[in-house]
Each structure stands twice: as C-alpha cells, then as structure tokens.
Image (tube, rainbow, N blue to C red):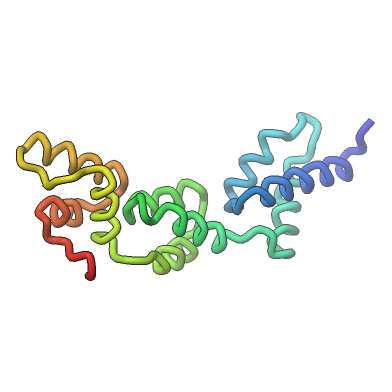
Length: 158
C-alpha cells in the first residue's frame, strides 16, 4: 500500500523526469500531463512542489522549451503560429519574445522557403493565388509576407 505524500511525490517526480528525458516541456504543459495521472487520493499540490524542484535543479525551463520549439518549427511556420504555439503551452511573453528573437532569417525568407517546398510557380489565377495564400496563412505567416511571396518580391538574401 502506498504512503500518502511520499510515494505520490516519488511517482510524480519519476514521471516528470521521464517526460523531460524525452524532450523539453514548458511548466504548464508538464503540469497538465502530470495532472492526468494523479489518483483521486493524491495531493494536487505535489505537482507544483515537483515542478518547483525541477526548476530549481534547472531540469525544467520555459526559456529552453521556447527556444527548442522555435528552433524546430521556425522553418515551417510563421511568427504568428510560433507565438500562438508558445502561448498555448503557457510560455510567458518574456521567454517567448526572447526565443522569437533567435529565429534565423526573416519571416519573408522563411515563408518563401515554405512556399517553395510546396509550389513550383507563382500563381497565375485568382483561384491558385487563393490556394497558395491559404497554405501560407494556415502556417502562420502574416498577410504582408504572403502578399510579398505571391508577388515574387522576396529576395533570398534579405
């Protein structure tokens, strides 16, 4: 039989370390995942204590998570999508903007690269322009950038 807080704390800590060993997580994201595994008689405050300990030991960092997510996704997605993904995962504005500042290339260059992986030629009809524009828009690129890409006005060396 389990003891009340002690074995629950070990269980929560072990699960948290296991999740962090696979990839970086934000504090909010990790708390959500850990909460799903709490038994009805477990202390919900244990999750916060474990997260505090992980942050103190520098095993959990929203800044590291934000930098990792932005680095992995920046070549496929625009600034709007990256910012939304960070916000949804509970990353604070300071950490999110610091991570976004580290993005390689301008948003226009990244949009052009994403467009080039999918399309061979600039749109010649309104329907094709709409289709290509929606493709870039769903990936979180701004309308100004989409307009530049579809007009062929983005220089790769910008």
